[in-house]
Image (cartoon, rainbow, N blue to C red; front, side, top):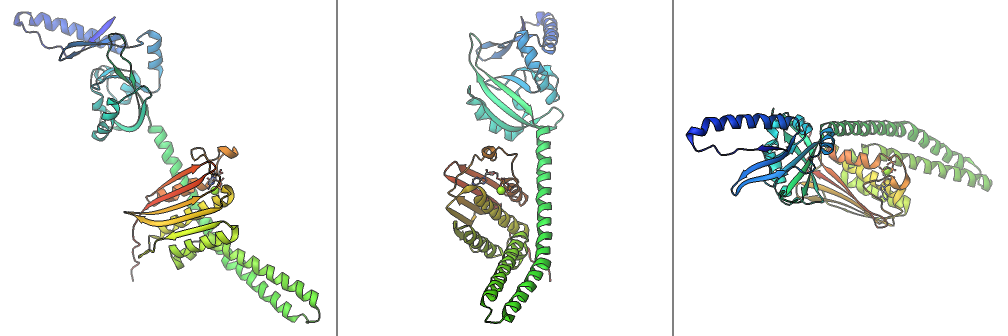
Length: 403
Ligand SMILES: Nc1ncnc2c1ncn2[C@@H]1O[C@H](COP(=O)(O)OP(=O)(O)OP(=O)(O)O)[C@@H](O)[C@H]1O
Ligand SMILES: [Mg+2]
């Protein structure tokens, strides 16, 4: 059994000092060799009440092979956060030789902020375990995003209580998240540009044409003699249908493009969206909007409008709701948009589980729109009780354009 000894106090008798030093040097070399080869089974830590021995639980060969082959950092800490044991993977992660990692404080690999966050978690570590996201500080000063899992280990025989820590390097997963965010943003941008293009086409071409057709069909109705009642009735019906189509195209064009938002302002378009939705679907919608004293930046207004549209579209498609409430108000330095429905609800952690689909774009694009203007989006949903979407967006005022 190899035992690593840490920081023993220097010998007192000057005559024996040289011998003592040689002995300690040999011991240190052996310890270093043992640490490098994973042969340490116990660690002696000097304390106020004398030396404390920590055996490394499960120090058998098979256990070590498993820990060493892990793609995650594995550590055992004393309750004072001293590293009793670390695997090579952790040493590589923090770019520090293993022999310097073992015996040092775990705190040295954490930022000041994370040390403060981890302190109570390490103190209250239990067997169920806790996970937090933190930044590791490597020996060369570089920062590594990591997930740290903490779990307490029982006192065992003469062993003291220790804390097991597993550190997962999140660099790759953060990079993937960033890529995904950039991709989602691009999708939302392309979607917005495409909507604008289609809205323009509808407004400038189809609506114009339809208006001309409606006008001509009215002329036709007027030209039919009064005695030809049935034909006149049919022509009138045709004219009305064409009128309805023209109205529908105008509605779609308005929903697609941000033109109305520019002209009427946020509160007016939210009111219009609410009225149009309630009239078309028969779902009762209550809208409580604070009066804005100044215009919000154009991208903030568009984000709020699109989030409401997407949420209402989901209510119509999925919720089977009877009542919807929409609130827009100021919450400190934020503007808060909340949409509640009393529909069927869903599992917000796995939104598409119910329908076994790969997932739609609606919730993703709502979140992206909120994030893009510096805000957040929360989804709370309870099956059979309804859904709440809350967007919290920093309140800024639109800069006036120059003269
Ligand atoms: N208000 C809601 N009530 C009930 N279920 C909802 C509600 N909103 C979303 N969902 C569920 O969440 C899933 C994901 O919604 P999301 O808007 O992302 O996609 P989608 O509506 O299916 O497709 P898309 O929005 O791309 O047309 C939906 O398929 C639905 O199961
Ligand atoms: Mg949707």
